[in-house]
Image (cartoon, rainbow, N blue to C red):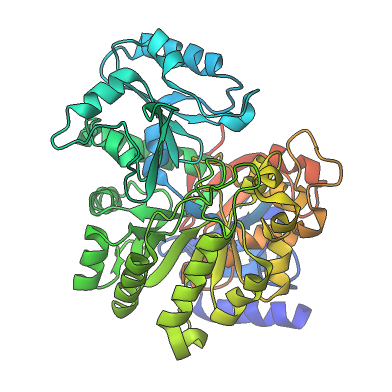
Length: 557
């Protein structure tokens, strides 16, 4: 190992730029992300290019670059930049401008928060997000009555925590009814890929699931350009403050990409965005017409498409092979028909693009795998790196198919700890064995990429590390963790948010590790995530976040 380190340092010395252009950072612990590599104590990079020149021993690099600008971090720990492999920046930005309903434990608490928010935001539609009926005493979907009593005239639309259901009041339904060509909401009909929840008289209760939500959204005025810029700016600031240097943004529209490009042109992207087009729509058409997009600044690209197969488990929209254990005769929803899904996958494949598919239920995952197998055919061993986003409930016979087809399981550790209180109620004791099955997928040879799905979950990779390592909630429950045999080691979890996430985005030559020639993207923490007790992972302090060798976030001292 010492000979290897010396060789790297000598190589770096041969190509070293002028000393004035070198930045040198020293810390008690620097994890390079290179398997089996020794812990380093110094990192050098070219200030002009933002690329790593050398990583190794403090005294050796001080001797190699005696005139370099030095930053000594003392006892801090440096890790490669954290990458969230599945998130939604504009969705997050929108929630930051709405009423925050996360953690509410009753409908009354939802209404109380809305009333406080409405006092400061008196005009237009009243928007909020984050409610979850699984945290309420009755655990049933809400209805019109509670919102109507508090807001009889003002339209209200509240997104569920998973983004797969919404709750409206009667004023919102009246606004919806005024849309051109809108069909009456009563009766037994259902929109494609969605469900209007109705009462015993076949009248809408105010809850809309998956594709049905588009009916209400069409009645809500779109945000203006200034608001959209504010949404993106707030989301980016929140992300880098949590130690994120990269985000795989799943479901980016043509307009959203144009906004991100303007930010990139103006030097206002503090992190890297791997954008995935929003289904078989305009952004995918642009990619097919002009090829994959990469901004010359290196912080924005779009080379893939995100498709939808089914809904979410919490709203019973995930497509299952058999009935929900707690809702007989319901097997969830296919948001996209298998025929349309096949068309979209073949289109993306023909355009040379990476395919990523949202699939949560075991039926949704099977259809996605079956379609991938058909389309790839004999090319399944090629370096396509197609993905299944969430891979949340997988039938045991389908787990080995991920590796066999070269499909990445893009998973979110905090989904397991958020859902563990009710997931087995939905699935029963047999299907739960294939749910949130990180170690089973790894043991079968699959690649994992880890993320959060923010704002469905919090924008905090430390919580993801904690959930992955413990499978417990923040209070340490259940003892030993939920399905503890599926826990990841701290090293596996950190790799899932760094090198493995980079690989899933075809970015492994640029980011995910701290090695000569790669970009100097890293995070400074107060303690070592590979050495602290797992219970302390959520309390790690992000002291600073660096991209291309420049700080994009620094904590107040």
